[in-house]
Each structure stands twice: as C-alpha cells, then as structure tokens.
Image (cartoon, rainbow, N blue to C red):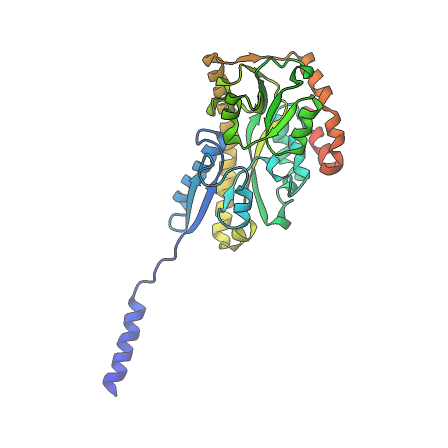
Amino acid sequence: MYQSLLGVALSALFLVAQPAFAEEPIVIKFSHVVADETPKGRGALLFKKLVEERLAGQVKVEVFPNSTLFGDADELQALQDGKVQMLAPSLSKFEGYTKQLEVFDLPFLFDDLEAVKRFQKRDKSRELLHSMARSGIYGLAYWNNGMKQLSANRELRAPADAKGLAFRIQPSSVINAQFGLLDATAVKMPFAETLKALQDGKVQGTENTWSNIGSQKLDSAQPFITETNHGVLSYMVISNQKFWNSMPYPVRTQLESIIEEVTVEVNKDAEALNQKEREHVVANGKARIVALSPAEREAWRTAMQPLWKQFEGEIGTDVLRAAQVVNRKH
C-alpha cells in the first residue's frame, strides 16, 4: 500500500516537474500585390521585423509580395475565409463593402498629398476605418503611396486628349466614371497584368504613382506621363475582425502600436520613394514628363467636378464636406 502511494506521489511529482510545452506562435500571413521596394512592400517588411523583435515566440509574420499568395481579384475573399490574416488593398477595392471610401477616388478633390494627410487625421476619416465591420473587415490604418499621374501613348495636356484611349483601372465605379467623362474606355485589370497589357496594346494608358510606375517599369511602355497629381493611391491595412479580436489583448494592443509606428514610416517613405522614382523615370529618358500649368490643371479639375456631385449621395455629404475643408490652407 505504501509503495503504491509512493509510486503515485512520485508520478505526480514527475509530471509537475516536466516543462510545459510552449504554445505555437500566432501566424499572420500578410499578402499584398506590389513589389517589396514600394512603400507598401517596405511597410509589410518593417511590420514583420518589429513584430519579430518585440513579440518573438508569440507572433510570426509571413509576408507574400507581388501577388505570390493572393492577387487583386481574390485577396479580400481569402481574408474573409481565414486563408490570410492581413492585407493592405487600395481603397478602391472596398467598393463592394462600403461606398464611403469612394471619396478617396474622386479626381482632383484634394489639392495635394498634405490635404489627404490632414483628412486622414480627422474623425470622419477615422470612422471610415470601421465602416466594414458588418463584413468582418477590421480597418487598422491608412498607408499612402502618393498622388497618381496619368500615362499614355500620347501627350495628355487637356481632358480632350484622352478621348478614345483605353486605360487600365482598379475596380472602382468612380475611376470608371472618371474615364467615361473623358470619352475614354476604362478596363478593369489586376495590377500585376498592367505592364504586359500596355506592351500588347490592350490598353494605351493608366494612372499610377511614381513608385509604382518605376517599380513596374511602366515608363518603358508609356512614352508620356502627365504630372496631374489628380488623385491619391492609398491603402487600408486590414485584418479579419474575428481573427484580430481573438488574439490576447496584450498581443493585440502591441500589434496595433507597431502598426501605428510603421504607418508613420510608410507614409514618410512613400513621399521620399515617389520623388526618387520620379527622378529615375526622368533619368531613364524613356518617357517624357508633361508638366501642366496652373490653368491647364484647373481645366482638368473643372472637367472632373461633376463626379463629386454624382457620387455625393453614395459617399455622404458629411464625408465629402470634411474632405473639401482640408484643402483650405491656413
């Protein structure tokens, strides 16, 4: 009897003395559709680096650039299915979930990038991060990739110059209407297919930031780039809401703090990188940069303003007004 009790006691002691198996780290697959050497690409890698430094053993981040895991057409569904945990799609991709974010696609609405940044800090813009909660999409931050330029196989100096051309666009009703207003054709196409479509002549123009033009070598297929700065290309860093809220609170808050830190760096980096890529495009000499005079740019803005009214009902008068107010420089 004594030996039996002693055996049980020793067995229990043995079990207690065994080290507990470490829990598997939380895996975050961060998928995106652009190159590593773009603001978004660098931001994803910086996020991975900081997470590995500060949450080692607790969270593991895997980054998949250039549509290597999921592309434009299927990444949001993949997020909702739990096949990927973080994305940073351009704001145009959210049209099926909320119409309010269309405000960022309106051409010539913002005077410049500084106006965009002022708007993104306002309460109304912060509210838009949570506008897709019903669809299980959790907005974390805005990452900017700069202002968009128009490129084409002919010089675009006035709105009428775009007539008859086909432009590659993101899936956006606003951008589709933008080119419709110019009597041009809008062709929805994944970003990864853009260069080949330009080379093959399926489209004759596009709109993009300097960093994307440079990283994808779009200037090799576009002899003219008009520096319109007509719209902003911004991304929203998002997660699956159920996944995000399932993480332990200390881990979640640390991740959100890291994202906030990375956002500052991404937006700073975007400005520097766009300037650098613009200089590279000029130095390459494959495309001619068309500079608009203030009067020419105002002609473009006047031609595009009917879109503001057209989409006001979908976006919301309050959102549109908040966006316009930031143009007033003090």
